[in-house]
Length: 295
Ligand code: NAD
Image (cartoon, rainbow, N blue to C red; front, side, top):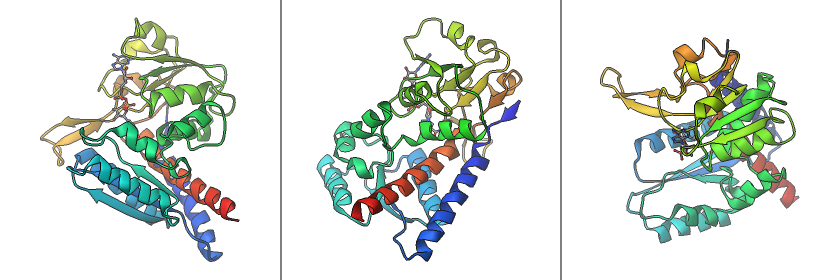
């Protein structure tokens, strides 16, 4: 069994990006600039945005955090999005989800300029991704693909079972892994809450990508010997014995499933850090595309 070490690989990717940024600086060029919009004070969102901004600083990107109060109106947020679209200094930005209930998330995502949509959530980017065209690939599935690539995990002709059909993980990873290419060429089954006899499907899987958010959901008796496990789930479980009052866990019963697996991602330290690295990679791509458009 080999651990797919997302922390290690994400640091490698960040080091590679940092080298490119240093070269940009030496040439006197503008460095990539990522902005993040956060509405309200959701604990997990504050943590995610904080680590995205810190990572930007570490690798030499410019970063801007726009932290708006919980009661920000939809109109004010749309104005903020329009300002970011119009600001030539910003190469890419994200609007951290979830947004407060009174704001229509879809309306906001549709307002983001697809050329600055480094989260890859805009339908233009999602559509292009599905058609194998140049786009921004959502950071979490992009991170999973990169992890599989860098560990040379064989995916061609393998049966991949994806659990969960969300627009940000399950759906895009099922599309990407069924396409032609490296870390792809897989035969994909996309499962969800209405799937009948999930266990019969996961038992056939060479690769399981679990993205549902239920701790200990995927158990040893649901997978075959030699399986590759990608655990996307991140759940905060309240626990007073931990300093923060909670601990983080994935969807997989790691202790027992890992005994049967050839490869497995840990939580934390697997897909999570890869997501941030690929967001940075997308921002670098955005900078390069803007530069070639301006040339
Ligand atoms: P979601 O919460 O929007 O949806 C969950 C999905 O699971 C749904 O499609 C549902 O149909 C499916 N599901 C629920 N019960 C099921 C069952 N019994 N059998 C099969 N499928 C079932 O999904 P999401 O936003 O993709 O988040 C999933 C998990 O991944 C969460 O824990 C989230 O925190 C985590 N996540 C992690 C990262 C990362 O960077 N590692 C990024 C995004 C999300």
